[in-house]
Image (cartoon, rainbow over all chains, first blue to last red; front, side):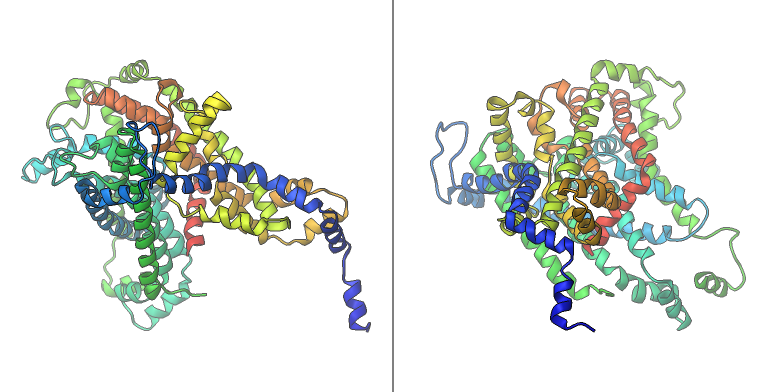
Length: 314
Length: 292
């Protein structure tokens, strides 16, 4: 057996030597920068620079009225606190999120559990759920506006069959947001089903069998074995859906434009109005950072609370 | 196995001739596909039948002329081509640029690597709404001062800002780091340069990751609405979602026409989706599993 030091020296493979040589000549710096530059320039120009720029803008007065953009300190942020529409928009955004996220998760979980078995036509059932992923938010909103049309819509027809009075839906300040909740839950069903099905298929059958052998019924097995094993997927879905819900825009733009009577004005819609209809870039940037803060706080809470209920096998 | 014995025991011998889950899944599926069905039915109804209450679920005459009418009212073919060009270019650009950058961050040591990586990662959390106003100003400036094709009101403006993403770089870097380094080293010894190593060895081993990134980027680009809404306003530069939204605001009560346009704008994606369903599903599931 060779002496340790000799063996170490001999283990310096030619490849390692080549790497060492490259480091000496500095060609790796050159290659490295050559490889990252095209992508990094785009990410910096359209990602990193705008982050700083909009932070700066949020402290400026920047609108069509003023030719120059003086610094106004916290005035935009203070104006936001006194803007009643911002308060309403935060309320609507949070109500929407509180309904949409659990709603989508429950529908997705229910369907995934039902579809997690080898029965006839199962791929047909699954495909029907997946199909909602292929439809754009605009197409989805357009169909649901038609389904919920107050005068000619199918939903009001179903209501008339059940002797429920005709509703105004998207024309009603008290109902419009709920219609948007329903259409977006439908639109996200496929996504939730895919996530839950993948997680369900990762659950080892022997754990479920063991519970059954111990005399646990279906419901007990589901509650005590399946659900805890799904908790990482649930946490992921909760966070992912929440981030998307807080940024709701497309459906509101197409169906109600924030109306009636501001009842569906959510934060991003108000931000869009301020930025690209009133061209208040400074004020809109402040709202954007406020939205960012809300997203950070809400997801941080979800991770903090979620970790307590999340069970990781590995 | 256990589920069946269980059910059999509880029902005391009585068993349905088919799985009881069908009783749940059939109504659920009907609810899921009803919007699609109603969309297609309305698209071939006459205006009089569409504006009839109670709604007519089986039209007496099929008015296929709604489709040519919709095409006359708005260039859905143009929208489709624009969407396809934008989505395809974005996917190709992301695969190339994120592979190069991801590989460099995974394997090469160069000055400033750590700092650069941290800066890029810090943009990962930021919502689009924070960056969209400066992005609009930068795009406008680029169009005026550098190249009209990537400026406001050109489809280039929908491609360039998304041509590389922090997510793509991070995702591929993570995947490249899991590959065994020995193949790369022996190729280097044989005199291959870094580009050859990436192209001949790393990328062929990374097909699943590349397919995932491609599928997710494609879906994202195809469905994108807010940025096109801001960046484009002339009809011949619009993508399908934006074109459809504009069409809706011009014909808001002509439901058969709107639904014909809607069918035309969602059919291409449905076809692509079902043709590559396995990849799309696996990619979406991968984001979930990676997140957990």
